Image 1: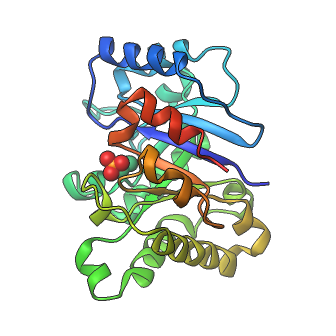
Image 2: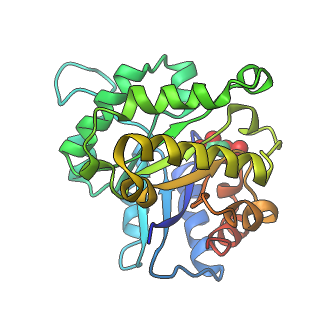
Length: 253
Ligand code: 13P
């Protein structure tokens, strides 16, 4: 059975004090995770160790970095390597977020390299894909997302993609309050699974957790997560509010 995941992406928000207070509040807010469910916290680099420590002893709860560099080590001032992340106990790395693609010019080729280096150091990528508004409005979203998958993932082996995590985040739904309808989400998630199945077979595709991201809130999570091919969410704004994120965790299938 593939994993159902509620992943928080705090983006560039919160001081350390605010982040710790948020985790304390969340820990005090009733939420549960069953055997095949996970909660993942995508926190800023400087707090990874602190938040990891706050979560010590908790089952099925993990931390994610929001990026890493594609090279092993060396003269890359300001960058953070996969090995560094591994050395502090990071579990996941969010890669290919549309904000990174847009503001930091991350290309398909660079993302493919970043995914490779994560595998090399035992970090689990959460690979983001999703189309901008003009592509959706011209009905080209399926082809657009298919290209992202092919260019960034198709060099990987079936073993590497077994249990892999993909997040579908339509750019027009990120931070806009405009959520994709549950039908739109299901349709794209089924397409993503079909693309992966065509290349790797139904078993591998069926093991991939496909998360939806884009204005997920406590109020809409249950309906979106209830779709057959939606295996949880990657949550921005609502993950900064303990009661919201606890309710989102409780909405997992
Ligand atoms: P919002 O939930 O704020 O729309 O952000 C989604 C997102 O980008 C998560 O990675």
